[in-house]
Image 1 (cartoon, rainbow, N blue to C red):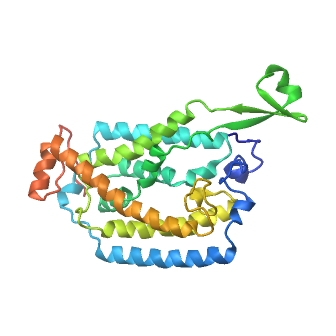
Image 2 (image 1 turned 180 degrees about the horizontal axis):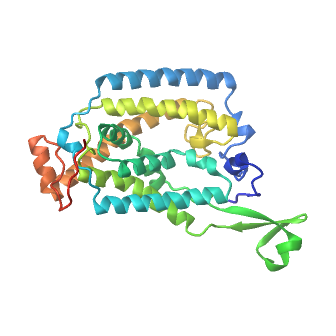
Image 3 (image 1 turned 45 degrees about the horizontal axis):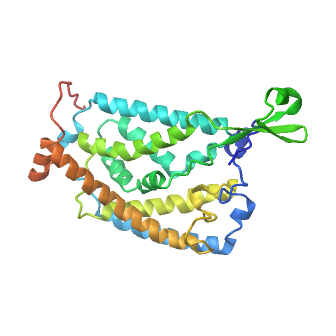
Length: 327
């Protein structure tokens, strides 16, 4: 597939001008009109009611059971610094790709938002809000796993528009002529590689943070309230800001205005089906990831094994760096 990228005439053009609406499911007026306005309004009100119930029920029950020493160690280990640099560079390259193709709107997709959250978690000092954000993030990673299992990389192509009189003689054999203009299909260097690196980092970093402990601790496996609260928060995000952005720009972010052509629930009711199966994924994946990660850590790390047996969540012993206490 290809994306036609004219030079942006305004800041807004830089956000959506490069989106190729000819690709099915990408967006466009027909995509936005797939579901009538009255049905959009009814489904949105229903989703908001579900979101409020889940968020409120979870918020009343969740609590951060932590000990003061978890927030006293301000050091950042070299491995954490390395992961932070790797994630920032990877995301920076991805932002550069979106800017160069005038399709910055795609940065509102869940995996890019999750990348920004993980950058904050890697860079932030130990605080209780870090524990809260970390636990919510643990239940929001199902999309990155799906992106690894079912990758979509064939659309990472774009088309430069060039005048035949200027560049045509130099690029004969590569151009697709159309009147006085030609279209040159180009794949940005390493764009597919960056796709894989970014999603592998998204899935791997939480395991490293669990190994670090400190503020990066999870709730007990039998406690489902954090997952329920996260489900409510994600429903709100998808149905209000994301859907609003889709309608405003006609870009089908997260398939919120029309279904993917491969959607098994293709039809006007696909979004209600999605609330069901995505809800199951959100509730189940975070617990499964936590269960597998903690079992691996208990086998390879004596400190984690002792902490699990004693029911403690104290941070690892100092590795030679001086710990700085907060005032």
